[in-house]
Image (cartoon, rainbow, N blue to C red; front, side):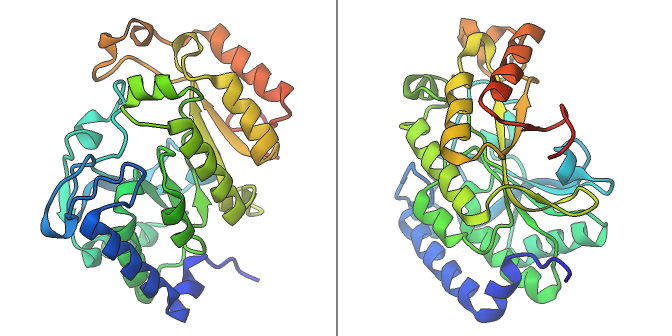
Length: 307
C-alpha cells in the first residue's frame, strides 16, 4: 500500500478546518508559542517574532544540504519562513530570522509554493522556522491538500514549541525535526533570549515522538514519518551536549535519528560572548559522537549507515 501523508485524512474528514479555526483564534491574542506575546496579529500587531497576519516567506526551493533521508536525490522542498520565536545571538540566518526579510503571502500563495515544490519532484515539504506561523501553515496545507498535495510535511523548528499547539498538529505533521539547543536555562536565556527553554523543549520533543514515533524510511531510504532531532554543538560544551544526549536516549528513544551538527561558526552578535567567538574543534565533535554511542544512540546522520 502506498504511503499517504498524515494530513490527507484530516483534510478529508473536516478536522483540519476545525483546527485552523482554533489556531486563528489564538492569533487574536497570540499564544501560538511559549512566549505568549498576546498581541493581535490579525490586526497587524507584532510580537517577538515580528510577523503579523500573513506568513512571510524568505525563499523556497529544493534543498540538497539537509539530512540524508530528507534530501534523497531530488531534494527537500524547503520553505524558509521569516521571523522566529528565538533570538539566537549566533544565528547564521539573522537577516531572515531576526529582521523578517521576505514576502508576505496569503494561504493560497503558500499552498501554490507547496504544490510547485511537489511538482519539481521534491521528497517532502520542509517548513523551516514554522512555530510562529503554524496557523497560516495549516490554512495553506488545507488548500494544498485539496489541490493534490501528497508528500510528507516536515516541521523544522527551533524546538521552542508550545504543547497545546503541537497537539493541534497531531495527524498533520509527518516528520518533526526540532532542535535541542540547550540543557541549561541560564545559557538559553543568555544566547537565545528565551525563558525555560530546556523544560519546554524536552516536553515538546517527547510530544513530537508520541505523535510520530521513530523515523521511518522508505525502501529507498527516504523519510516518510517520525522524529529527527538536531543538536548544534557550541564551543566548550556550552550547549550541554552530554545532558541532551542522555535525555534523548533515556526519555525519548535510543532509536532516535540524530544529527549532531559541527558547523557552528561565529555569526550575527556572537562576538559579544567570548565563548561564542571560536569554532568547534575536531576533538569536541569526536567526543560528542562517542558520548552519543555510549548512551546507545546509533542513528547518527552522515556518520554511520542508516538503521
